[in-house]
Image (tube, rainbow, N blue to C red):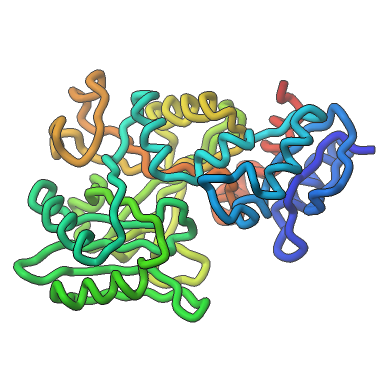
Length: 345
């Protein structure tokens, strides 16, 4: 018998799941890791979803048809699922999340659904660039790990372009200047299979004083109670391209305090989506660079602030080995997660 199930532990590279199992076991909590969707789970258990979840869903518009969702639905009446199924699926949809941000009055980057035809993409870039002047980001609505991301900034009749893509199952990074015809060829080659969204590019305060580098903030939220953060600084125009496991570009991380705004916004989303162990990505930027019609949604109550934290994305299936290395001398993340699992009502 066991009291906690870590759902979706992979047979390879599941060190974080094993760390979490150890932390729970050290507190005399019977725990198991399983990736067997047919396994019978005893009633009354706490189930934390970790891996083997998004990868089992072929069509997010009809996610209830996937075998993994059907299996997890059967468990909803048997135990307490931490990170709700519906919350995790919403997190995966970057366009739907922008609607949730607006509903919750959380500062966020304005986001648009795009036609992935090369002519239509180029037309949208030209129109958006004329308003924001910082370039645009185009990405897969359901993507992750920095793949399928394009940053474009227009310079005269040419386009400064950074692309993070996959070619022959290998990550590839392209940083070149293209003509309009060449850029359309790149779109046709690398973005044809994606459902795309577009955003004006929002620089951080750091970027304005450090041209050519980028910065984002990862905030870890455990149970809406424990928060800690890291700064990700990249020698590249697109931060999460630079800090993938494949070291496409150089970057670094360091500790940073979690701002009160970031705690407040994280907790709002965590509670609304019934989440438990989540990563939030923010850009800290200066309010005076924007107006109400510009690139970001700023709640009226924050328009007199000097600096705000604008949310980029939510990561519901958080890998935390990298940030743990920053905090080894202070605490163990798995121990914090285990404590919150035990106390979760």
